[in-house]
Length: 421
Ligand code: EZ4
Ligand code: CO
Image 1 (cartoon, protein in one colour):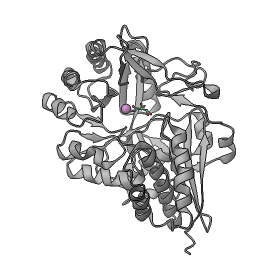
Image 2 (spheres, helix red, strand yellow):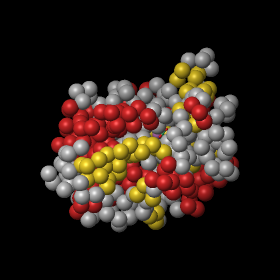
Image 3 (tube, helix red, strand yellow):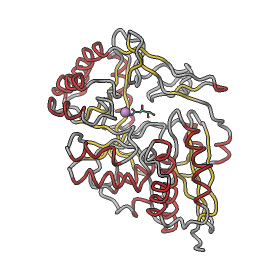
């Protein structure tokens, strides 16, 4: 038995401001690896999948055999893909890379090919219910040092819009007094949480958004990279209209303009607008991208390491995309834990076709449980020089935050029909 044989594995569920699922793997000689398994709003399904179906298979396997373990769990399941399975495999994969890099006594990026750059350009989320609030939010993020900004805005006539900061204290997990610039899964003590239902109006949105980008460009100038997320809400024709109307404002990308599960929708969008397109945060496999990449229907792949089978699989996706000149823009919301975000940052440093890294700051409570060595300089993130992924979990702090069910919102059209959010 090698000393790197897996001795034990454990699922840690904790909720410091929001829910996280973490897999901790320990080898015979005591090396510990962490993997993120957080599936926002469906967290316990992955926790149970890991505990009941994966951990019993891990004991005694050599932690060094990462590719073989990945294939063993993926092909062995018979049932291909799916967010629950792929998040579970991702967590194992991340933990094994963490272990391998610790055994090698190197920061993980060294095992992924070493540095292609000194830091990963990160974009932050700015939002406002109106232009004044939005400008304040953009200025705050520029003051924090961000050099690329995602712009989300309220729409006249709509009470609330997903992705637009609400005020604190409304049960969304924000700390008191803070604006809330990350997208909440609403929590509710004792299992009483229900998805918030919001009303959506595509025509009002399409009328309003170009005027917001016009205002932002005239206030903040032509250079600042600006991004926008449409959260899968548009038909191909509507997406083409939005893309065209945003062309004068030179976006870095338009994200998730159409429902992601229909790759052919993007053929229509591509034919009608030159706005750069990004998609993939809800994908869980490189196969989900096959048409999009080979037909060059997107400019950026948006997967998260946690939701796309871990470092092993995300590296394959990035390499596949690179052959077509397509870049990465990994999904970095706060529901990707600091462990998952660390994996992104190591890949971002190493990958030649890195594009940009999404970054939503984790709350203080989260960062007390997950101790990172991230650095942020000149708008660029760096994972730090600790060996492995470079994140430690404080088990005592983790225990203080019990799981609290949470759901993403539901959108309905004026006639009551459920819509994409
Ligand atoms: O809505 O992570 O680009 N970022 C996003 C996210 C997602 C959430 C869903 O879990 O769209 O904020
Ligand atoms: Co998004």
